[in-house]
Amino acid sequence: MKVLIVGSGGREHAIAMAVAKSPKVDKIYCAPGNAGIAAQAECVPITAMEFDKLADFAQEQAIDLTIIGMDDPLVGGIVDVFEARGLRVFGPRKNAAILEGSKAFSKELMKKYNIPTAGYETFDDADAALAYLETVKLPIVLKADGLALGKGVLICNTLEEAKEGVKEIMQDKKFGTAGNRMVVEEFMTGREVSVLSYVDGKTIKIMSSAQDHKRAKDGDQGLNTGGMGTFSPSPFYTKEVDEFCKKHIYQATVDAMAAEGREFKGIIFFGLMLTEDGPKVLEYNARFGDPEAQVVLPRMKNDIVEVMEACIDGKLDTIDLQFEDNAAVCVVLASDGYPVSYKKGYPITGFEKFEGRDDRFCYHAGTAFNDKGEIVTNGGRVLGITATGADLKEARANAYAATEWISFENKYMRHDIGKAIDEA
Ligand code: AMP
Ligand code: GLY
Image (cartoon, rainbow, N blue to C red):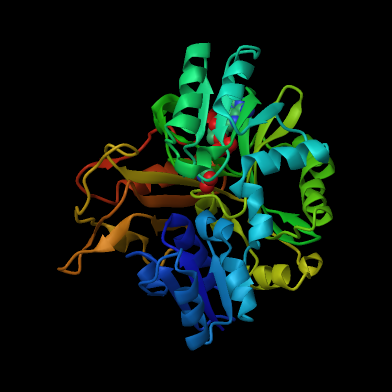
């Protein structure tokens, strides 16, 4: 088989490494890819939003399966473009990717189908939102409706902050058109867990749980980022939590989408908060998490291509999804200054230590080749260093040891990824 992966981050590198293990696959392409993905795949210089060019390429190369890693093309309808040309593609259509693409849509869906989530109101108009804020309990959460690189969520402790937030989102359009609508949501407290799943329209199979660390600095300080590190499984995702979510959240979401005429095929990522009143949905994503994929996929025993094909064909019920009985931790190596401003173009060394290993992985996120053919930093999140271990503590020690194998100027990481493990 020939497989095309669309995207260029650490998540797509983890997908590429999983696909490379499939005995069914002879050739992998990645558009646009990065300097690390180039070891598994032939990188093609087409960006993820160039749907027609990507579909032309898939037709010309007779690609058997295209996997969409990123949210933007999914929400923009890339799957519909591929399907209209008779191309096999893994991911939700536009009318289903709205589960991630519109927070107002997902909140309404949860309300209609009694799926546990925080109470909320939706606003199309800043004045109405401002008036409503006078009546709410603080802190309060403001969310731009559309995609905003994971940055469109503001947690406001005072009324002044909240008013300023409404202004930023709806009037100053800090997150662009994502802020044409806004959700104002009750603030919840508890531990967060990421649960990824495969869905074929009817059947859902849950992957091993994970936890992200979204803030830039140790102790969950600093700004929100795309994610600074992950571990899997989450010790807080207990049997009771699993049973509750299976009863009230997972299948309920898949069935709700089908009932709305928005059959969902692909990955549903449930962002959950384990509150005192039980697990509640913080958000849905319509793709693998990044860097959740970097700890979940190395632990998956199945052939990923087989699982994805079963999703496309509506045969996921025939798959016995299995994970290793171990743990994995991913520490992101970033450019100092991320997520605000940082320099790029520094040469990176130390990759050779990861070669040929199946227990230490160096996933590339923001890397490129310079004109001397060296691999250099090319983004805020540069690499994701993943290690497995018999348990979480061992995996964490292994991951931090492996972060030392890599050197580049302005290398930055959090030193407390997986600290929560000690409290479990
Ligand atoms: P989201 O993009 O919806 O996952 O939000 C980003 C982050 O904001 C989440 O991972 C939570 O840490 C936080 N957050 C979102 N919604 C709430 C909420 N209702 N209560 C508390 N924290 C929230
Ligand atoms: N790591 C969170 C996300 O991918 O949205």
